[in-house]
Image 1 (tube, rainbow, N blue to C red):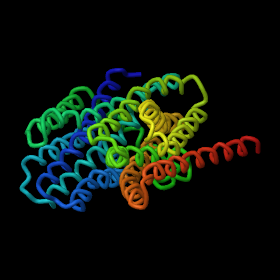
Image 2: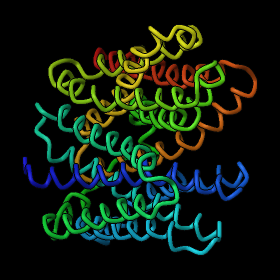
Image 3: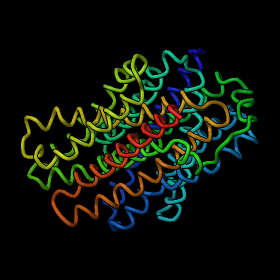
Image 4: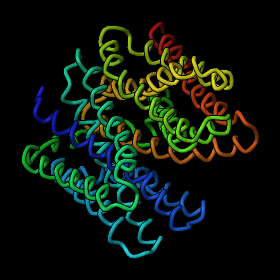
Length: 384
């Protein structure tokens, strides 16, 4: 295992997490202060997710044309330009939407390739720990973004300066330390499934990714609204999101360590079942603060575990061109989950006070049912 390459890839995905975690709330808050309508804010907020969906269809042709190093250089150059454009673009929502879309494309390609390369670098007996560390760094830097806005303010030049500078540092690290022919050979291999075909090949892994993307977008955008509607102060409601994300970040490496020492499919299903149980219990938990806070930590941990273990199991099953295609499907599903999560949850919250727990429970149930079905199918196939 090349530890130095691994460090560069983890630093790169950390910068992607910071770019996402800082620019999403910053752009929304600036638009709100400028008097933009909720529809306009919603459309601009959806642009990075749309870009990530688009990136999933671009990865395969790009990999055939460019080396991994060149792709990473282009990704971080695009991300740096898109982030800085938030400051210097004219007051045009159209141009801003284009910049946000391009940021999503750059982040999407970087994440898809990064997940593939980290899995290829891992020794099998440490795959869970390393992929979990990768995911935890992404989440931690995503969490750092809103904190930076809170410290520096929405109108300061410094938040954008920091995130643009970090993207330029990632660009420099890639330029200096990734080999020129990095990952060229792997993408010349044949593959047995397409981008959409991966859903048929690994339905439980796909619904796991879809669930976490749904969960992540709903927690970031609507959980404070849900908590404040049940009597919590806005500041406390926002802090609950921080606690959920801290649970996610803190427990991924321990879960990864555990996955290297037990049956990964069992642990994956257990995380999904726990997320489903807490989702179903939220209507009761929200009225009992002493139990709610530890439950939120556990919810973040197990929901993050569903995603991390999906990545681990993808790396366990696939390699080369198939691994890149699988992770491209992950990127596509992430974008889809990020788009439908707030839409479905917002609609259900409009119908009743417990719409958000219902939405989270439905998403978790989809993963649990699919995971159980996949285990039964595999058991039948083995006995045949």
